[in-house]
View (cartoon, rainbow over the protein chains, first blue to last red):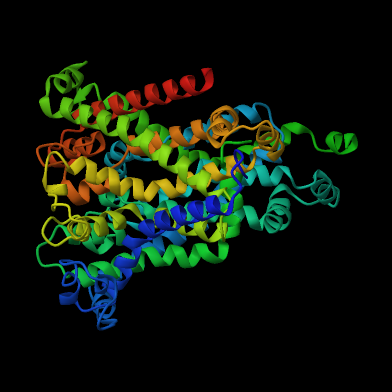
Length: 282
Length: 288
């Protein structure tokens, strides 16, 4: 895309250079985080004042911070995060796909109205109800349980919306043929719709995963017992303490950031499709 | 088609549909609608007793609560337009003639993939006044070191920098998708007519980008009104309440002061203000 008349090589250089500087500035904190996690603790602040290139270039590379981190309570928090995100994706996909199936394939009165209501109510940001919900969840004995951490994340309006759009694109003839052969609605859902919907399921799964992996407020409210801490909460708590090790802090930050990146990277083309299909430009 | 419909009456599908919908609807009611309703009801109660508007009256007479509302409004009035303007400028760069566009776009998405709590921790260390990386860079460029999170004048600014770092690339990603939908024939025609870059931007691109811009602005506003992790982790609302955004104030009332009624009333006010702002944004971007 090109605006205006400028198509000179000079202009291209300016544009590319500006972009390079901006992106470098954006990447600097990440580079600092990663290299600081890979150097001995006492080196972390040594080269900041006066600033030298050594600030992001360790003299001595070491995995010691990671070793110590995974021996500490943080390991438990990281495992909790994986369990909670995994359960949320597994339960959430089934729940949301079932709802999407009812709202796209099955015929009943008021279907469009129910669909609108479901999506709108799920679009209410979760933070808006998290605090009142936490009083309620305590009365249901959900505090310090995996159920308490997982359940608020399982049903997701965006995920229902995406799956419904995809189900609508599956040819009606397929399910009509299956009906003639005597298949029930559940069989059609499980044997035809789910297997055909892999891209939409991956996109929805990513949404559910990111919701839980990013979660901070809800885990803080519902898990008071530190053995039920999720990784971001555990990291945040540590920063407030006096005797924390910066190296391990950076190592923890890298670990928590790297896991979604490792999951997202191979699946990024599904995410891109997902974001595009929800990008408010339908 | 007709034969099948006669063969399976539509009434049977309603029951099946309900069965398929029940699990999601249960979660929706239990974890969204019911707590929202309780929150509204709870805002008129104190320790389980109905007190009418007492909570609201108390809040509007409380300096802390009023200051928190003002801080939230100041924060949002500044950060939302600034973030969207930067994201839009970035998006314009990303759709220009550049080398390896997909690489740049992927890099810009990295910050939003990092949980906000983690970004808060890393930036918190970078903002340390004595030995932080930000001041190191400032001093290397010849500027004096700044107090950042420890100063009532700068703490909110530091939070804005951190939150913008997280969000700007993400919103730019959405906006590039919108920019790519602009028909190149339009821009081509403008170029032949001798339009400059700024003219093409002002009269073609911006009018056509109103919908994506409105979407991004509203989504950004919602997330900024509900911002919580960096406040809790870095400042606890201080120094002197200068970063006490409403979400954090609600949290304090609910869990530190154990006053659910007050917390509920504050949450209701927050949502009401948010809805008002979002509807104003929609109207504003639609009319012009």
